[in-house]
Length: 400
Ligand SMILES: Nc1ncnc2c1ncn2[C@@H]1O[C@H](COP(=O)(O)OP(=O)(O)OP(=O)(O)O)[C@@H](O)[C@H]1O
Image 1 (cartoon, rainbow, N blue to C red):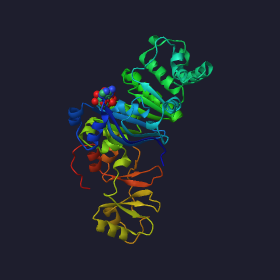
Image 2: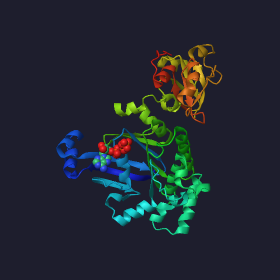
Image 3: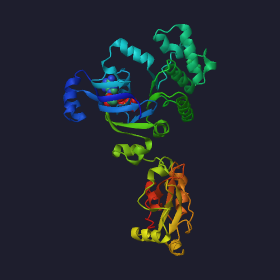
Image 4: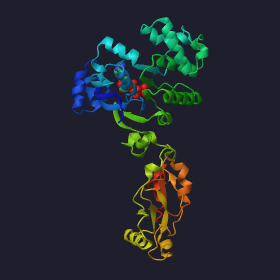
């Protein structure tokens, strides 16, 4: 069971000076443009309810103006919600007083911004220690923590350097170190790598994944970039006009986009690199026979009943053993057990292999190819037709 770190319940944000009226109209189902026409209020976030799990990287994607930044700033109340609950570790930060809120920000959450937000007159060490200083921590202690954080991002040799002599990537490492210095459970990252060159950006993504593998935090990461979202995100939330329209793992969304808007985000993604054999393996296209206790005659009977040309043979623990075809069974003397019947060998596919890697195997095999887990246990099978459909080609059905 996954532990919930952040939970939003019916959260709304209306920008403007009379949010109540707009909220009432919104809850009645009135459309945003009409609400704006009547009340001059803008809907930032519309009825967001979802959970973020401890230790996951949760990416928020959506077009410009879809409400990503607003949503994330509600988590630490940089923006005040108009209505709803925002629970961090079960405590509703929407109703906290200022000192409670400060304590949460100081101990549980940090934010990294796209613009780096460094102070030019402070050196790297003081920039990294700045949040701790604001929190009232004594100098010695905050320097120790800031240095630890700078070491984590590979900048320990730059403590006396000033931001303007650092490259963009290094500046953002300082931003990250500042956020890490108070060892937060939750890291909020608003387009944190978007201002960086592609190569540096990719390096920073790797760095973040490395940090995450060493010290699991809950990371909420806003991104415009699909590749980044797919690389970093355990789950992705897609926002459209203030509404969270879909949440899922990258491949769940890719396989089942909730609407055209979501589909358009994923257009051009190479599905073959994302979807695995396990995702598309099906149990409908083959007949399975358990080896023990079945003779060739029974096997032939079963194939006839199912109107199949072949069957997979598995042992009691469902481990895949091989394949028998009608032809091979007919060659054997009647009643002979399957043990000695002609068990043909066909290749198996590891369930975690991605589609790009299995095309050759499926294409070169006459039958559907069995997919197995690491213990050779049968998961399902992939035919050429299944594969082509998954890759979104429009091949002929192979009528096996
Ligand atoms: N302070 C504000 N006052 C009024 N409207 C605002 C304010 N901040 C945001 N909005 C509006 O709320 C909506 C959501 O904006 P938000 O900045 O959250 O979107 P975003 O998805 O983060 O966009 P971007 O990717 O461009 O940063 C937009 O219509 C925006 O114009």
